[in-house]
Length: 208
Image 1 (cartoon, rainbow, N blue to C red):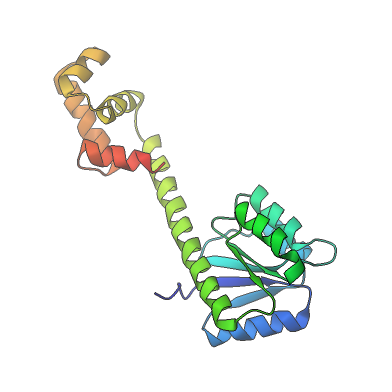
Image 2 (image 1 turned 135 degrees about the vertical axis):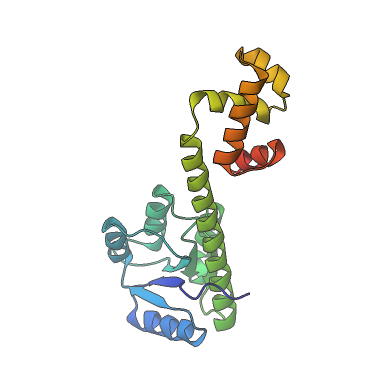
């Protein structure tokens, strides 16, 4: 399965020849890229209001002057972007243990120089797919949160008890309302949450 065509690979490396070579490699696999000469430049883009709106990943050199790749990764973690903007570290042999630690902290992977072109692009495509999945999950959670805000306080009470598995009669007893009122609120909850059953409602809320 190919990654989304509107994906972007951000190349962050202080070596212009490396940036150009990586951009050419990605073009050969029909992957658009955007080059940044250092961590400060990439952070400036983030500070300028950039949001991850399409599947993306970052090819990030570990060793760079001023702001290292590790420092930039810390910035991404602080912003909670490491899931929707997966990072693949480009590292020399001496930095492999450090790169492994970064993977444990949430980086997608690392590639040791000199790396196999095909292996690197394969990992880039996998990172882009991961980004797309995470973006879709965030969008779904945002939609669910929006639906929840449309519920009245009483509808929330009914929903909580429905999810707990209580029948309408017991819900009515607990909330001191009629069974018919429970039925009305239950129907409204299902409609607003766009579900057709209590099981589907419970599964939907589990995704939050």
